Image 1 (cartoon, rainbow, N blue to C red):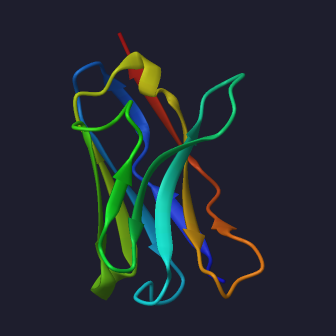
Image 2 (cartoon, rainbow, N blue to C red; image 1 turned 180 degrees about the vertical axis):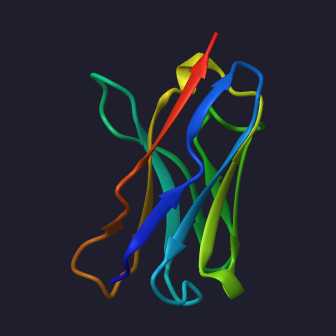
Length: 117
């Protein structure tokens, strides 16, 4: 598995942008899937976006067209560019890594994103 550390969260006004980073403890080149989840107060954790080893991406309908997931192999980092932020995007954002050879996924500690109206 892999140790993940998120950064880049903060407080932003509606309509603003933030970029989250997820630094992995080793190469991410051969990890099947990496992604971002979020959990708002009182709600279940939900999938936001994923990027597969082959490069294909997935986005939840709620963020499609506003968020972009990307990766930098040289920096062992996955990013989530969040644009046109809305108050309903407020949540703790978690980085996730999953591979078919692992017994369980790896998770970061989370980073808080707060969008004010």
